[in-house]
Image (tube, rainbow, N blue to C red; front, side, top):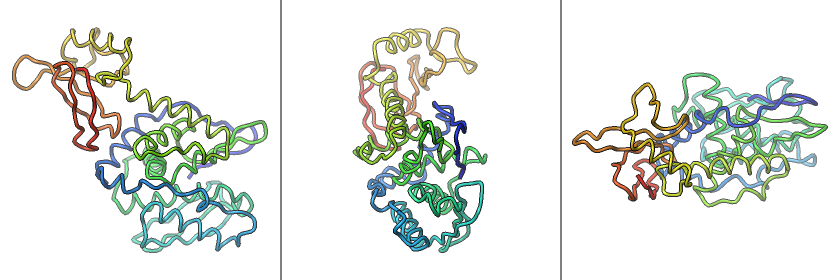
Length: 306
């Protein structure tokens, strides 16, 4: 896992990886199912992740690693944690198990508050390895790992490890702080959590608020009934234009719009395709006005105005 640190070190912001993050959430639903995702409804508790100077170094590290294993529902996996000088925050050796060897940077011998964040990413690598879930490219696979760690309840610690002020520039993982906040907000909406009280970093809380705003916008995009007036007018204009050509229409959906219009398989009618705001599975509905639809993947019921 990467670590940005040091005075003046650059930290990327915004949502540059949002497409891969959304694809990662969809992949988790497809691999685990809606019931499997909801089995991770309990996040790792702040007390379970705590590791202070009074704890024995190796016993404390093993305790925190065990907490990550329990949070990610890997009861038969054993993490062996070792410290050594390294540029990366941590790395894990993936094998058949049940023992996995995690190496973490020597800096965690003294900077212990963030050890759980580093371990959450590495233990998620183990989970995804066991599930056989990975993306083709290295960067995309690391984004998948960060997303899974947060969405399954262990990775909020990665966001809390973000600090950016006059003295410290630190961020773990491959997502931006705002993207971590986005995934955390989507999880919070799914399982009914309020993670805002867990943050020890003010900058992490601010990033969560920005990410939550982006996640809320996902639920206000046409053809969802909660879309705002301007978005609805753009949608109505694109609907009048008709099916969306493969190379992108001059008068169809605006650039970046998630919906596309298609001709129905039988008859002259239209249907609209768009991603479910919960799992990202693409839905296809007839263009027939107000209706309710159930996503076949996450089983969310959506109010739509097609």
